[in-house]
Image (cartoon, rainbow, N blue to C red; front, side, top):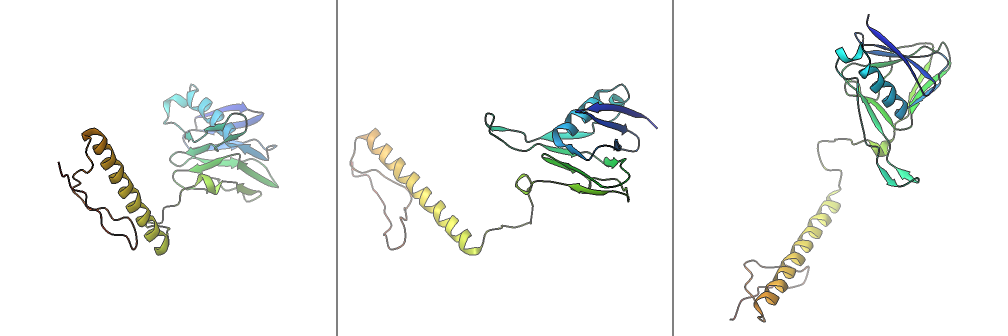
Amino acid sequence: MITYSNVVDGVPFTWNFEGEVVSVGPSIDRVLADTWQRAARDAEASAPGIAFPKIIDAEGRTILEQGITETDLTVTFLRGWLILTEKIAGTFSVGGGNVVSETYGVDIFALNPLVTTQNNTSSSGTRVSTGGSSLTSEEAALLTRIGEIVEADEVLTEVRAQKLRKGTDTVLVDKDVTLGPGSRDVALRDRT
């Protein structure tokens, strides 16, 4: 068994590269996403770790407003990596962002029947693919109508730009523009 041990932010980790299990010391109740990122990067760069594929991908931390708002970090354990707490009772959790598995989703823990495990993920940092649209038919129709209005506005803006460039009162437009319910189609023709 090839392993590497490190301590990051006061959290002791043991990385089993062959079994793809990372053990967390028995006194630890919670590990944050940024600690997972630093610990895994250290293990990947270790003498035994460089001989194995990388352990995690990490992305998503973006500062939106300096010192005030940032998006959560998402740490994705690759292949079959799992987290094993060495606690013998109580609760062990991960959080402070999203910690997930590319293979198992949010089910990231190796079995320890003595401990309750919690993966505290953020739904705002999660994209759910349903295979279709989540819009109601009314919302989809409204969105289509908004697109038509925006397209009509873009055509009229181009018409105005052509007028300015040509110095004419009217210009040729090769398509009809529908301005909305109850309005008439507008077709402008060049008279010069």
